[in-house]
Length: 317
Image (cartoon, rainbow, N blue to C red; front, top):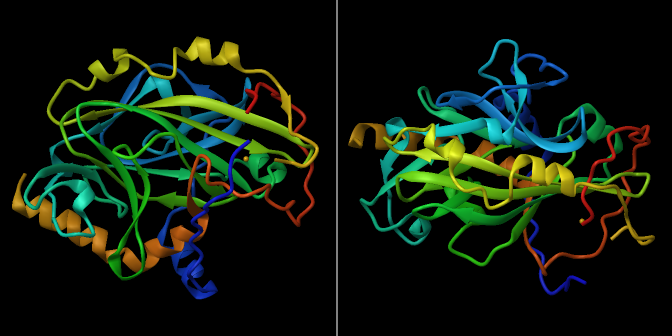
């Protein structure tokens, strides 16, 4: 049983700012995605992608929505390497607020919250039609392990530019956050050293029928000048794709419902700062929570929607 000692919830914005966010961020899909899952490996170094849960051919899973394809497609996480190249390399600003990125002047690779030309722009969303229709209130997103040569931090720009950390590999894992249903968010993905990073993650949720769905996946990042293809064959802390599919089985929730240059550096930091107010709206949808610090069950959603009747390949929570 998880303790309920602490839960840090950020809810700080008015409806007007929510409207600003909706106008500033594109829809979850850059065009309608194919209903199936695309096959074949791909390296993505620029353009818009989103990570999110969906009910695919084999049921509940976490995939990458590739908006760089035409038309947009869903891909398995094991078939995608997100390349973080030289355009994302900046100098850490230093100071207390950004101390998690290293000392002032240290090299750091950042995929920024604001879209930047020549850099991949990963976000996360909970806008799959069946997910929004059936899941109660939120999806729990958990980071369970990080493999890589340096540190990884995912953070948002809050009000007045102060960073709000979502995940930080220098702190105890696992860590978790809640993603409100039907939301779409972007953040800053920071890596302190070049090399291959594997982010072991899971997304789980409970439906209005009381069924719990849980999917574990690994995100592959190639940081710096190395051959990105190496990231496909790096050791996977979450197990192989087939292993993870084998471990999946239906589960029912408990009765109580219990879920390099100075120029590029300047441009990127300007982009981060420019979206500070809009980014704060993302904090409505993202609440940082640690395992062991989560409160009791969320209340049932107020809207009625048909329950999911397919793909019960979830893993017991």
